[in-house]
Length: 149
Image (tube, rainbow, N blue to C red; front, side):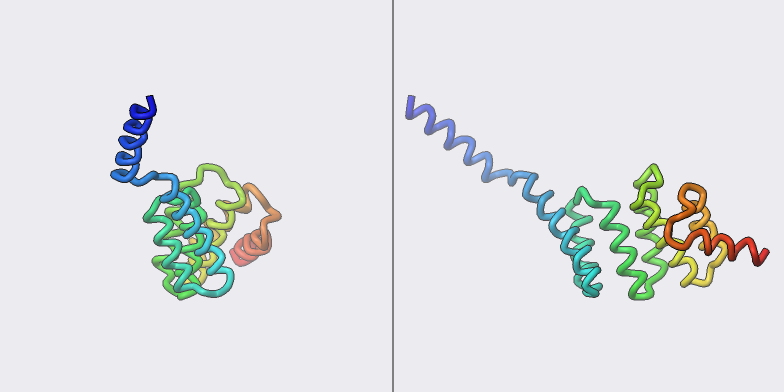
């Protein structure tokens, strides 16, 4: 019996060596995403960008949040077109207007403002205003839009 058990373990260890387990890869991707977010908050935008891109490539379960932070990194570096692309992708992944989606849509509005597109910015802020008038300063932003027109 011991000989049979040994052989069975030998076979499984060979199989394990041939194909690496997927859980550590996911954990590594998640760690990269979390590291990227932390680096963004500490002002390390270049390293945050690298971490977030690695996390997204590896398939993090924090994909929407990683896309959001990647968009913020690009916005900080004034790479507005790339910021908007990342934010649009993140927004599409979320179906309901939860806090993360509000953050993403608000960032889209800020990027549109930075690009000089006040009509698009107002459209983003209106999306939030329609579901949460108290979110940040969207009420003030929307009131400005309507007071001009």
